[in-house]
Image (cartoon, rainbow, N blue to C red; front, side, top):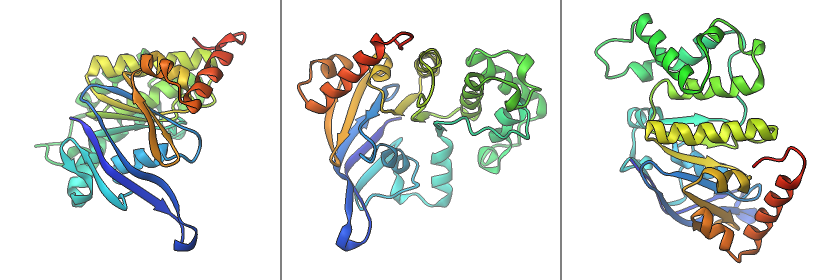
Length: 264
């Protein structure tokens, strides 16, 4: 259950002003690994995620998810592949008009989830799944009847994770999960990513700008710069790197941690 990029290139814009975002990018995320993708804005981090779920196709090269070339999948195959990929966005993106229970159970009621099953889940089975996932993110059943505006932002982030986990994806994809959060909530979200990845034995890809988060929980760190992979290695190797951009990330991390209330 790996993710593999083989010489992937992607550009945008008219021919006379075309901008290359990815150029011959190759890497593999091993089964059960937590890979952080770092880089400055506009360096292709989110574009990389979009290639994994087939929202974008490479101009050249190939992307494999669970051994299948994403570009070769038909509509049904693409839908099935996307069901195996749980996406957690920067913001919770919960539906305020629905209860927490209905938000978490939403994906369990879709035709995509029920395709290939002998029957849809019963309401009792759905409730059991919802309670399991809420418990996984360290929330209590008491919030299930509340609406998102009635709980804290940090709790909304956890509910969003529970919603993503409900259909039992093989891969977890996080797009800037800690942007704009205070240090305490950032640490809680990082701990949650690590705990869920290990406990559920899923493969996780985290797009981030935060080297501190990557050093804390990543198995490996990939840094994109100028459309190419500048660095790919362990947190320990990142700390020892002489690359200027990585040193800048590390200096920013140290500066943030030295501030009162800074994250670990």
